[in-house]
Length: 284
View 1 (cartoon, rainbow, N blue to C red):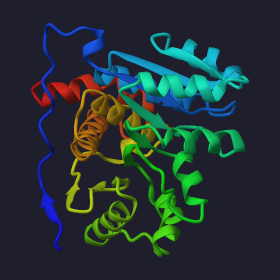
View 2 (view 1 turned 180 degrees about the horizontal axis):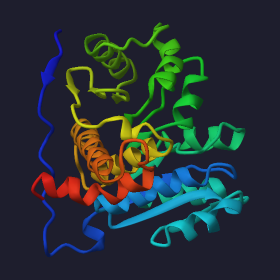
View 3 (view 1 turned 180 degrees about the vertical axis):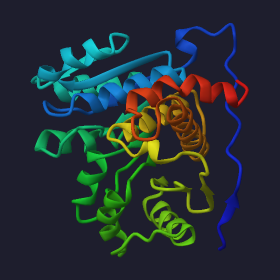
């Protein structure tokens, strides 16, 4: 069956003026380790800037204070306790959407957290080390209940490719769309393959994003994208639409930041700061 190609992103959901914190979704970000405290902080900050009502970050206790110092608007959940499984399960149950993987690492505890979270019937973003942990398995897990957007960069896609008999990640749009569609069909999830002109597919449709530039070629911008999509999922946006809209807004924010600061000098936090202008350009 031929893929249906979409050329325009979906419309940004309306934000009712009479809404309150509980109206705009609760996001749980699970990630970070002692050497990567910035990743969950950026993902959480991006989700808040995109409009999420509440964002909780689950990260190792040794890193949590630093994360909350960077973004005091976040709610913390320290990991590394005896009852981690129960507390993480309860936090996932309370959330409207999950963002799993930014800066997580691949130690045994991280693998256990990822596999447990996949069994929650929630919309989710699977990014970074969550993807690497899944790629290291013999096959895609059978008991996955999350309705996820996978956000691999080409290296992560190549590692995931071994699960679907793919050994190389091409660079042209058509071939990238084909591999994203194959992975989406095999995993039963939406796949957002990052790169110049990010490609998104759910196995039936494909969208090639046209916004963005080399201002986004900087560590941390992928975490910003994950948080942005997580916020959209938390308000009930369809995962494919959330991925397409997230990529469009992320690229647009990168373009705005690049014009302000120059393509060389943009940091991931600058992309977050420009999200409000990107949203305004979409008329919401």
